[in-house]
Image (cartoon, rainbow over all chains, first blue to last red):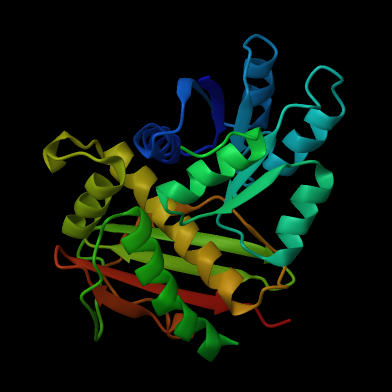
Length: 128
Length: 147
């Protein structure tokens, strides 16, 4: 089975790198969607079928925290798993995002295998 | 706090550049300036407030951007791409340094602000540190507001 992934990050460079890292890591990927903020991510999710979201926290318009809260408030989207990808590695932030409903957390900088492992853990996929 | 911050800055620079930008940090060097390159200011708020600064020489900025984006020909990079990657470098080094400084410290990084490179070392309160990347130099510094 291959997965459809949404990457939400305000940096075009970071979105490109995450896309490339997922592809090169060997993760079973069907398609990658991109959004520059939480609002755009919600728009994508309301018109496309997505299996998992990778989201930054610091984004304009709607940040990662607001995005996760919005997902939890939407009956059609609240089961969609979100993995936070952030430079913030403080316990306070990690606990806060998991309490809000994020299912995983990867801190930047990260090795490709770390991102793949977290995607597979959250999706319940056995590693090859 | 500033002494501890300067210690973790060097570790954060090496970790971030080597892990995600495929760039080696050869040595810490005295002084260092942006050589007319890119300078980024990144304010942060929260329990500790202040500002992080990053400078990249032109050569270093191109090289780091190429490594990050997987571009073999540096000439193919646009100024926008180079600036975007420099902002991401600043974001990651600052976030990594603040997280290492105190695991329980709550902070919010503000959007990175590219500014005209002054070509000079930062103000004394930043205690800038400079690193030789082989293809140019990187300078970083952090300042905490008095609480």
